[in-house]
Image 1: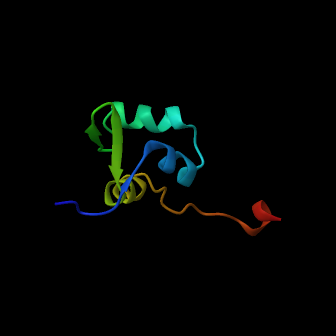
Image 2: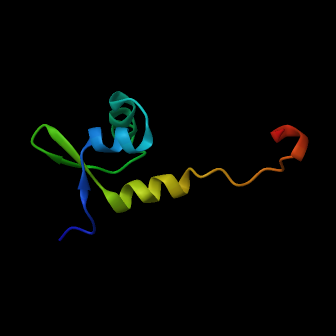
Length: 68
């Protein structure tokens, strides 16, 4: 049974605003878990959210002068 909606690598690349090949690389390197159906990959939405959470950069101190 699926945990969440399945996304294609193209859909993930559009959501993340990265190249399609980058998404495939993340899958092949094991950074994003995917399901292989024939010759195609599908990524569970929950897996994508887990990847994003693990790669979130914790806040750094930003001075007001850096913004203006």
